[in-house]
Amino acid sequence: MTGEADAGDGDIDIDIRPYDPARDDRALWALKTGFERGIGAETGGDEKESAYEAKLTDDYRERWLAWVERCVDEDPDCVVVADASAADTESDGTGESDPLVGYAFVLPESLSFIWDAAVLNEIYLAPASRGTGVADDLFEAVLACARGQDLPLDRLVLDVDRENERARAFYERYGFEHWGEMVARGL
Image (cartoon, rainbow, N blue to C red):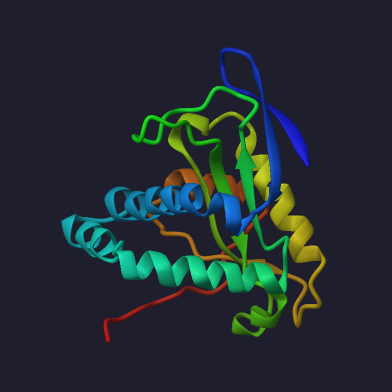
């Protein structure tokens, strides 16, 4: 799925494609750390920010990427990336440009019994690519994946931090409605 997104200074070509662990793992991890740090810094106080930052260890990276690979082995379309390799991309700090500007992760069908529905585990877009339409392209891939699953309830669910106004507005635009509330406690 290829789309064009307006980046303000012209259209850029973005390819929404399945995640390839052999070539994308480093770039996906960079996006994942942006996702986690954004949750910590933008939706809570110092304690939440510290907790999300502290979990980003080498061990967590290895375990998370292995889990993503197992999910992709089960359903190749459950993780998609927004690839801007044909467009100008920002450096990742190593002197190389990073062509991935976003990703979406739908849990595979075998995990649908967690919520009796398709589960959007994560969707993230690098800040420089927000407002370009790429999130809409990623979300269309999410819907296609979810619609292809044999689900107990014909629904797509996700959890969103009540303080993440940008994400809440995005989901509301796509017709999401409040459906219960998740609560948590420490172990």
